[in-house]
Amino acid sequence: MEFSNKLMELRKEKGWSQEELGNKINVSRQTVSKWELGQTTPEMNKLIELSRLFQITVDELIGANGNYDGKKEYREKGTEDCGHKSKSPHYQYISKKKVKGIPLVHVSIGIGKCKAKGVIAIGNTATGIIAVGLAAKGLVTVGLASLGLISIGLFTVGLLSLGYLSVGIVAIGGVAVGVLAFGGLAVGVVAFGGFSVGVYSAGGMAIGGRVAAGGSANAPIAIGDRAQGTITFLRSEVFTKEEVREAILSRYPGTWEIVIKLILLFAFS
Image (cartoon, rainbow, N blue to C red; front, side, top):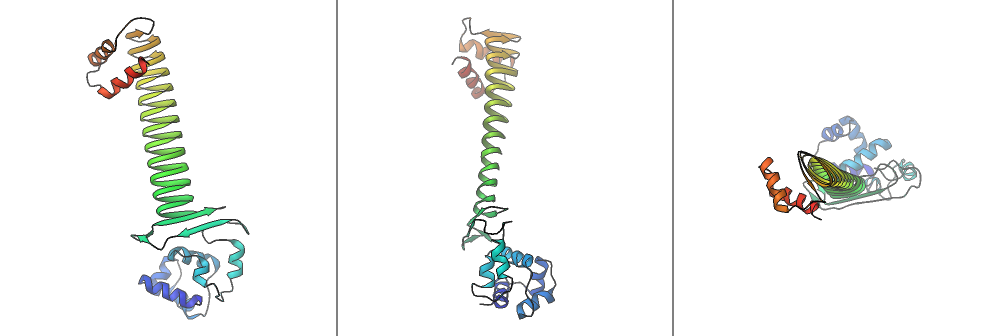
C-alpha cells in the first residue's frame, strides 16, 4: 500500500479529520490533503512524527514496497524514535494489544534516545506501570536512574527504594535517605547503617535526636561501646532490654514498639 493510502486509512481508523491530524503534528489541513492525494510527501521529521502518532514503524507507514523518495534517507538514519547514527543497532517492539490506548508492551533499545512507553516498558528511557531502562519511571521501576512506587537501580527514588543512592519512604542503599533508612550512610527518622543520623539511629557510628545505639552513640538516650547522652547504657556494663525499653518509653512515651525492637535488636546483637 502506498503512503498516501496508508495515511488515509490510519487517520480514518482513529476517527480524525484531516484538520485534526494536521493539528497533532503542526501542519495545515491542506498539507494533509496533499499527502493523502499523493501530490506531496512529508519531510523526514514529519514522517517520524506520524509514525510515533500512529505507533508504527516508518517502514510500516510508507510500505515495504512503497515509493516514498525519503525511504533511503530513513534507512541510513535508523529507526524512527532513536537519534541513531548510520547502521547503529536498535530493536523495537510494540504490541498490538493496548490498554486505554497505550501498548501493553513497548520495547525500544539501542544507541541514541530510544524511548519506550507502555504498560510494560523496556527502553533506554522507559515509562510504564512496569518500567525497565537506563532511566525508568513508573510504579515498579528498574534502572540506572529509577523513579517509582517500588524503585530499584543505581540512583532511585520511590516509596520503597533500593539503590546505591536511594531516597524513599523506605530507603535501602549505599547512601539511603528516607523515613526508614538502611545503608552505609543512612539518614532518616529511623536510620540504620555504618554511619547513621536520625531521630532513632543505630550503626557503627550513630547520632540520634532521641535514641542512638552503636559502636559510638550520641543521643539523649545512647547505647553503645562509647555512649554520650543524658541517659547512657555502656556495653561494658550490665543492663537489660527491659531497662532500655523503660528508659525510652519514660522519656518518649509515643515511641512505636517496632522502633524499640529494632533499636534493641541492634543494641544487643
